[in-house]
Length: 158
Ligand code: ADP
Figure (cartoon, rainbow, N blue to C red):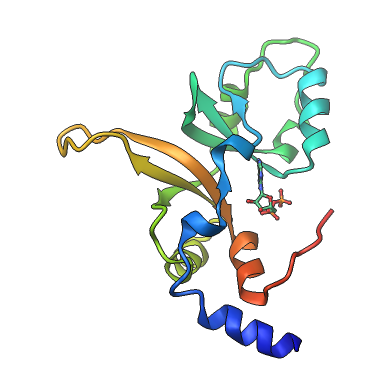
């Protein structure tokens, strides 16, 4: 029954890894930092229905920040002079570029909660140089992803 499912879900959080529940980078809707924010961009972004949109620079695995859809609400798009980067810098929203694919869901749930992040960016090291460690994004994970694991059910939210 449902209670049993929830208990099982909560108890399995420690053994479940982020890589098993994250949204893969290929499925993440993102914006490029230098894109000009016009009505067309805002409208198409709304179509995806997500509230948080990672921002990348040049390549998709180079995530540099985050915008919230509501950040576009008061923007003057007529002038055509604002880029995604401008909006991102102005609101300066935090995002968690802290998460490794092999971290446990339990660990990450606590980390996101404690530091008050809703979304974390899952990263991987590109090379082994300890002097110049390059990272690339491989996906995102939100509190909702982890809570779904806990309750073993999809959360429907509009
Ligand atoms: P929202 O608040 O935007 O509905 P949630 O945090 O509730 O997003 O997450 C719902 C699901 O959508 C999760 O599986 C999450 O990984 C995924 N998700 C969130 N933002 C994005 C995005 N920009 N692109 C793709 N998937 C996303």
